[in-house]
Image: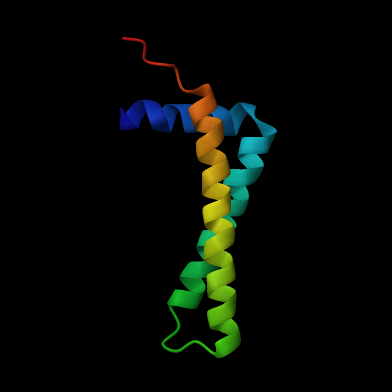
Length: 77
């Protein structure tokens, strides 16, 4: 199941400008969060930025999952 999910993600990244843009932005937010989390202590401004980035990253993930769900083959019993 995970393999087909990865294949669908790869297909959408290759064929969908919208999905590719969302995935790129998600990866950028992930990188910025990793940089913040690597610091031993965050300033108040950095803490606010961390929360903002996490919310943005989650919003993007939700959008990507909605696209994946739309393109996923339906299981009919």
